[in-house]
Length: 143
Image (spheres, one colour):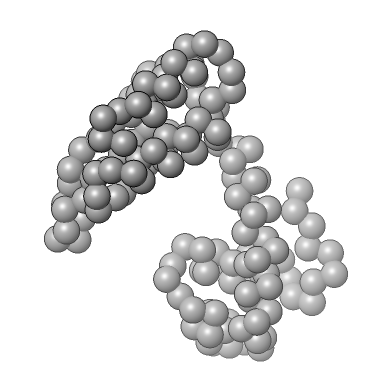
């Protein structure tokens, strides 16, 4: 459980500010203005401190609640148009076809290596089949 002990603002205001910063391309001053519109007077540096403190804690909490992935998963790559620009979509898909995670990239090269390594760290525990999947993905020719 994430503790909000010692904070001078209610938990909801802290979480709303952190969410706005992480979810949208807003500056700390923009978030400060949004909070002022809601009757909360605070400084942009306070929001920055909240983001630095709570973002890693929230990520860990969300990762713990994420549905575990089975033994079998595959990487999928396709070329799609997003907002008028062509990009590569890399997806990790489990046996049932559910998307585990995804990444968009403008180039078809190195970013996929980091993406696969991150998936390995987050979702795979140990076992020979899982390690073989990782090695196969790591050695792809476009990586």
